[in-house]
Length: 265
Image (cartoon, rainbow, N blue to C red; front, side, top):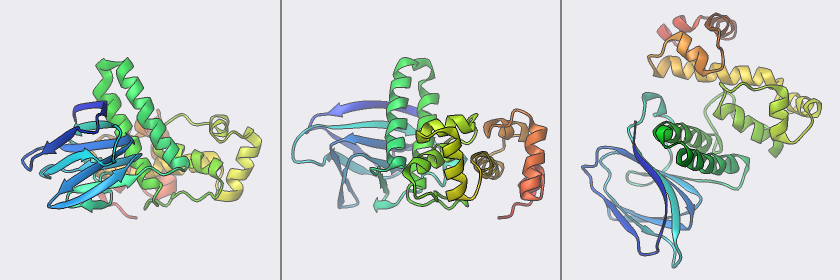
C-alpha cells in the first residue's frame, strides 16, 4: 500500500513537479513553514501545520510558500485500502488538491503527535516502515475529519478540552485496550473525577463510549472490507469473536453477518 515515504527539511528554493500520468496518491504533512501548490492554472498557499492529499492523475507544481526560510514535511506515496475512501475526502482547495489545517486544539495536538511519533518509530524500525506509515496516516486522516465534525453518531461532544482529548484518542484507536485509569491519564484527572465528568458531559460512561466507538468502527469494516467477523472483532478490541457478535447484536439488533448482508443506518 505504501510505495515510498519520508521526512525532509527543504531549502527555500526546492521545487517539485508531478505529472498527470502519476498513478498513485500522495499525502504530505507540512510541519514547518508553508507550501505553494499550483494546479490547473490556480495557486494555493498552505501554512503548516496542515495535511494535503492529492489523488492519482492530478498534475501540480509544489514550491516554498513563504517569503524566506525552509519548509519541513512528512510525505507518503500510496495506494489506499477501500476503507480509506471517506478519510481521503478532505476539502478541495484547488482542482485535485485536498487540504486540512492542523488546528491548535486537542485534536490538532494529537495529529501532530501521531505524525512525529510515526516518523520516529519508522526511523527506529525500518523493517516495519511501510506498516508504521500506513497506520500513522490512517490515524491522522481520521483525526482530520473528527476535528471538523464527523458524520459518526459519536461526534466530539464535550466542551472540556481534557475530555475532548480522550474522545479523540478513543475514536482514533477504538481497538486499543482502554480502561478507565488509562483514559483518565490522558485527561490528567483522577480516575474517579474523570469518570464523573465524562458521564456528566457525554451521557455515557467512559467504557460504554469505548464500546459504541468499537461498534461504529466494526460497522464500517463490515461494509468496506472482506475481513472475517473474527478479524474485525480482533481489530476493534474483542479477542473473543463470540462476545463481539453478542454485543454487536445487542446494540445493532442484528448479528454482524446479518448487518453485512442487509446494512442499515
